[in-house]
Image (cartoon, rainbow, N blue to C red):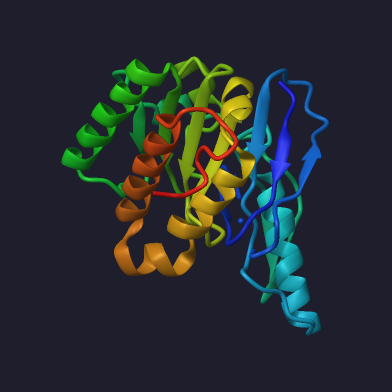
Amino acid sequence: MAFLRLHSPSLTPAIPFPSLHPPTITPSSSPSPSWSRLSIPASATCRSSSFSAAVCDLRSKSLNFLLSGALAVGLSLAGAVGFAEAKVGVNKPELLPKEYTPVIDVAGFLSDGQEKRLAQEIADIEKDTGFKLRVLAQNYPDTPGLAIKDFWSVDDRTIVFVADPTFGNIINFNVGASVDLDIPRSFWSRLAGKYGNFFYWKEKGEDASIEAAVMAISNCLREPVGSNNCSEVK
């Protein structure tokens, strides 16, 4: 699957991701056939001081590692300013649930009731649109990582939504090629900017960010494909 890297406003990862700069798309060297990787950068603004610039650079590099096929990131911190040192592929099938579910919450962000509501919404999305949304809530490196690919049978019509606040923005995505054909790439960055930014989830909670993002995706996927579909994050 071929990967795309989409940089957009705010920040995150763990798998990975998160600025108020327009998204840029660059091809990845990954040989995998049919996926788009959407990284949503770090920090809303980067001032010119050397310290801020160093922090910005750290966030940018860190995000780029996330979900780059390995659903993981290796980070080494040195004092106040750290640097991305190496990408480490995480593969912990022991963290997968015993029974199949489209929502895996190893971080404990969601209540049982919320998980059930999200699972039902995801089932309705798949029935109505044919697209598969899967949600993984984690705190890197406590994640099943690569093991989710086989567990969920990830394919071209799958959206993997990784909720991980490690780098600031809690919302990150890996998007299948068929999804990428129908949904504008700008939608994902705007979604992360609205519901994934640090201030939103700190005030309302990680669970609120996750639920709002799932409903926004559901609304988007149900819109007729056209020049203006998914132009608003609802």
